[in-house]
Length: 538
Image (cartoon, rainbow, N blue to C red; front, top):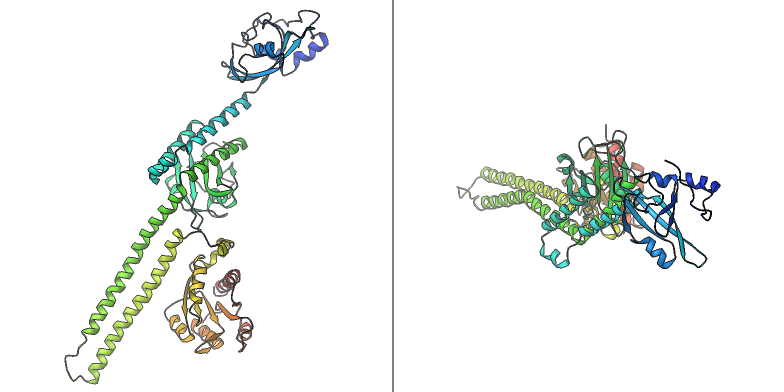
């Protein structure tokens, strides 16, 4: 193609300048008031579908592109305003988007004599902006239900509506075929309940995940840290747990509402390095709308209620049997006591002893059953109610339960005559998975030791029936352990018998002072239980 030259000496494009303008990467054209091309550079010619450029109408060589705005008549606008303008052109055949900037060249009378047109390829930026607009519209659509409609719909219906909308926009806009959304339970356990799963393995969907740094996959890590995570290679990622069979890359972002984590959004692909930082940012934008929709549709409260109902049903089923058995045994025993008449009105001593022995045996068996069933109920209650317990009280929420994971499922025996202290201690330690049993004196505690294993002891330095130090020695003799997890408890300065001094010499590590603070109690329990597990291994 022959390079066109400037049409007349008044053109600003001469030999030296033309060489520069000819080779710059921006497309340039000199256009007359009749919109005919007078001159153009190489980049402009490359974007045209014909060699016949000069004296041709401006839009024809470009393939009659579609004007996308904001100015749909830019040449007319300049004639009217004599000011530069810009708009977007879309060349449909190559799918190219061009940013067209037009500057007027004015004559001596301040009239438009020519136009200088500049074209820049903005395909990537324009498509990204269009994508963001579609994504924002899809995000707004997620929660586009009036409050009246929300009230009319059941929780299950609201969830199904949200699921359908997410799947539609994820497939059509984000082009995702595999995703998983989980909602963070607000019961304090950190459990991440599945809300939506698409393309994930059944075992992955049923997997229990918690908002914890370790052992709960990338999902748990993201929920714990409230940070997004881009996984590029599953073979080298220490947190990755397989969700979609054969996944090679994934993005996981937190669902945040007012800066607080309410769940996670995970996307996976079988292609290695399928996602980049731009994909991550897109998902973060969409996840913000998902979080807003979850809040607007009141799905978090539904999830909590649903967990509560299921937990109550399970709790009822698990405690019904031992309670029913205890009631029946007590009824039978009561009847046997009433029916235990001797056939002989003048019984011998041997006959009386036999009746008493039989009754004692029956009473002992029933009492043992009651004791076992009570402990079973405690254990079941601890397990199920943890799912429906509200968030930790303010005092407890300042302390991370994960730091005291060793306390979970531990049984504590407290020896103290103060009846109000037992319920208080039990309430505090309940949140950390402990079961607390209390007795008023040392003799009762030794009886409890005959049938029950305890993981730690908390004993007042003053107990009614014996020396607190002698009680410690008897516990050591009964358990025959290298180390007994023992904690002494006293008010400030109230240790007249020097119990704590003698116990410290004997190896007791735990000491708390009334009124004790929760961190003090937890750290002492963690210390003695850890020490007992280490020293009593062999």
